[in-house]
Amino acid sequence: MKFAVIVFPGSNCDIDCFKAVEDTIGQQVEYVWHTATDLSAYDAILVPGGFSYGDYLRCGAIARFAPVMNEVVKAAEAGKFILGICNGFQILTEAGLLPGALRRNNGMKFICQQTQLEVVNNATAFTSQYSAGEIIDIPIAHGEGNYYCDDETLAQLKANNQIVFRYAGNTNPNGSIDNIAGISNERGNVVGMMPHPERAVDQLLGSEDGKRMFTSILNAWREQNGAAVNS
Image (cartoon, rainbow, N blue to C red):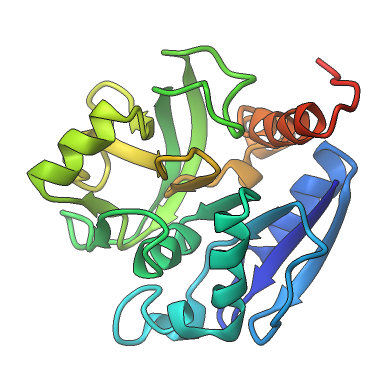
């Protein structure tokens, strides 16, 4: 399996994503610059966190127009696995690959801390190694992580089982509607989330609960391609 880690000017979690793939599942992974015009060689695409283009105008609003995003859209339409983390989530909403938008945190401050998430949907390619309702420990680091959508969109997300993660219990750190921390598209091959699973792949980092996101993606790809699946 081959992963692409998209790099925009201002990305700062690209190395974390690269190392998570390399160290956690030992698959091929390459950095891909924002000017790239062909992603056909890759099976999965990671859109990392950071401050793409300095977060000028609005988080993800400029990155959405980078040449590589045309290829990310094509990859999503082809059914490839797309994971947007933090700023990557913001970019995916700006690109129309995921519904809704990310706004300033309710407290108007940047938040960096460990956060407990509830796995709402474990039937995606990104979450199959978790149990439904499982509580996992994944860090956050954002100033604009307040997920918002209108009532009609929220009803659709619920009806289509597109809510992948919620902040558990009373831990909602940013004011996100319905405690939403991560969602998918209707097809389930595109996921965006504000917490950082790539920063939780080893107990030395404080948690290894993010590791199973990467093993889930690998297993889903192997199942699609008829390869043996490791537990």
